[in-house]
Image (cartoon, rainbow, N blue to C red; front, side, top):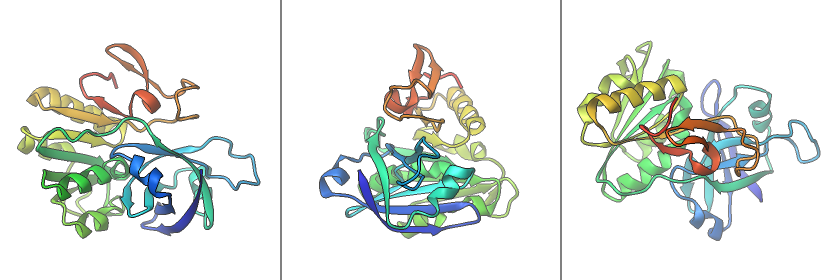
Length: 246
């Protein structure tokens, strides 16, 4: 669909938030943890051909927002979007509301796939804590959004420039009886997966992989699991931590 761009602003050195207006019917379909395939090029061009997968960061009224980090030519082109963008959404499975306590573990831009769930569950009275980490303070571009909704948050940076110095995995032992949901770099997810196994924690991983189609046709985003290879775009992006082999 073609979606009107409401804002596309810079949050930090490399992070941006883009918000688009959708119809009421499309907004109602969105569930926490799902993602969109966003066309980053101008509609008059053919390059780059492939869309970029972006987690649906937030939904407010008839507006959906996405946080993205400029890492290459495609995301750099997206910073120029001012009028409309072409999006396919919502895609993938979602984070089900079946527990009372949730620990959301976000590494840097991984917050893009977790914030909507944390916000909605917290507003519904669930016990929610966000562990938000990055290499430095500049990587925590979504912190103002977490603070706006007063969601309990533990901030961790590797260089100690904000919050506790260390890694997000350093604080997980305090929340053994929570459901863990993590999204971030593969190295972080592996560490969370290991910690969950040690503490027998109920843990889900939201996987962020390269995708070409986003709808299960190209098989470009497969990952190895206990039941063979699965497609992140349609079988995920949410998986049980002990199900996937990272």
